[in-house]
Each structure stands twice: as C-alpha cells, then as structure tokens.
Amino acid sequence: MKVIRVVAIATLIAGAASPWHLARARQGGGRVAQAQSIGLKRTELQRHDLSVPGREVVQVRVEIGPEPIRHTHPGEEIVYVLEGSIEYQIEGAPRRTLTAGDVLFVPAGAVHSARNVGTGRATELATYVVEKGKPLIALAK
Image (tube, rainbow, N blue to C red; front, side, top):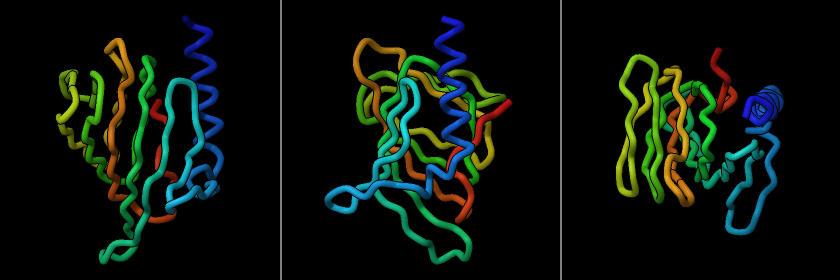
C-alpha cells in the first residue's frame, strides 16, 4: 500500500510540476483531455475568461480513485457529484461523504482531498473560478 501511495504522489508531483493545465490535447467538440495520475482521470470540458480581470472558469469531469491526494486550487471549486460515493476532507472541517446529486463548495486555497469510498466508479463535475495563468492544482504538504 505504501508503494502505491508513493507512486501516486510522485505521479501527481510530476503532473503538477509540468504545465499540464496548458499542454492539452484537443478532442472533438472542443473537449480537452487532461493529464492523468494514478486513480484519477481529469477531462477538461471548457475554459473561458470571466468579466473579472485575471480570472477564468474551468469545468472538469473528474473520475476519482480510492487514494486521497491532498491539494489546493488557486480559486474556488464548486463540486457536483455525478455518480458514486465520494468522501471529501477539507482541512479544518469534518469529513463528508457525498453521492450523486450532492454538491460541495471548496474555498480558494483550502487544502482538501477526495476519494472513492464506494464499490463502483465515482465521478464529479468540478467547476473552478481561478486566477488565470496559475496551475489548476498544487500539492499540499
């Protein structure tokens, strides 16, 4: 189990260190595929500048695995659970388990993690309102 966690964290670090949020492969219909890490698949659906200078909105479909990875975002994250059962931990708050149709708000810069606690696939629609030009995700210590 320790080896899997080390490999997962190393993979995420490598992804976070590279400009994966910018180096994207365009697919049909304007959809964008994101880099993948162990147990986590991110598919960018759209990205647009906002009327607020220096801010953009990014929507991502995220398939979540069983290993939680503590991280932050340079802005707010609004989560809508599409399927499965996902346990969220926002630093300083009690753990919460959400299922399809549930929502969650993660404040800007909050250290948090999510993990699949069900027996099937766990997927969320994550909408980020973030500072333009910053990496979408950063590992937390």
